[in-house]
Length: 447
Ligand code: NDP
Image 1 (cartoon, helix red, strand yellow):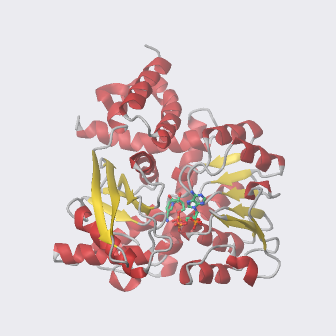
Image 2: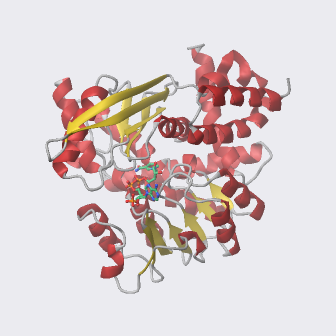
């Protein structure tokens, strides 16, 4: 069998076994495509069912999450935790609370997480979890009761050496607080290493809140530098207005860029003079309001409910909202408008067609599993601080993050070059992330 036939056989088996999970299929297809070239060169990576084992989660948990709303009515949601691969360390990956969550989405996120965590160079495996619970419009008390019910089941399956969840869409500092409180109560001990993204007075790490956005911009700056460009004076589009987007905007502007637009699921906001980050943080983090409120409060900002943020004329685009938010047409518009660099803050925000367009048009493209790894990397630094009962300064932690992101850029660029595809960072990230996990899996036997 040729390598192409071998890989199609794996993929067709996966489609059959995981029917109705298009996001998971998409994530696996991209990685398998990159791995063909590795299997040509090093066929031993197909031995011992390695590829099939890599694509099958070690464990998938689905559970009922009943809770009582403020009207005294019982609500029932579904909870998930997919423990995908622990060859490099305990499962690590966030929890997402969003009505769109289903098993396929958690599996795609968990699968991506394996390679991302491997790229950080830190000893963490891949996992992901969440629920179809919608935190929007819920009272604090409802969020607390939901989190307590969710953790009542999840606590049986996690632990400092076993599985360490964190935040993602819809799960920020408030939710991590309620989840940790319930874990501590059920476990009867203050096991700080069981969750990351904690508050600073009870085991959290400085820079964790900023880490994904800052890390994204550190890697973007590194990519621009390698091609003789810089963020100073650049025009940047950032989609989303959540945790990743806010701190990407802050760091990009600190490095001299002007962020000319951001968004949420209701529309997008054009900011030709740059973003007032303090105001955006107040609206989103303190008041928990919609992004459109920004237009009422900041002069020069223009709110749009039609058209697309990707139609703006810019140099750099940083998609930071959600999966498949940037399609082929958006990619063509970006390239036509002069965007030369795209780096993903969100997980899989660009469709396969968009990535093809970027390749064809010579737009440098850093995939999420490399570009947004700063969040999980700093979570691993939080675990290190918890294990040594220490807490590091902002400057020191930020330096560590910066170094990790620069290393990731160097690794994916060097790997792409080694395999004869210089500048193809998708290939570089998939291959470099894969080889480390694959070597560990081969060394540890068929399990
Ligand atoms: P938040 O919940 O803080 O913010 C999410 C943002 O994306 C909001 O502006 C939200 O708008 C928007 N959004 C969510 N779903 C949709 C949708 N279906 N259509 C359009 N916009 C949407 O999440 P984060 O900032 O933490 O996460 C953003 C992305 O980054 C996700 O892909 C996540 O997996 C990824 N990521 C996050 C990390 C982290 O450390 N937090 C680490 C690595 C990756 P609205 O408020 O209207 O819903």
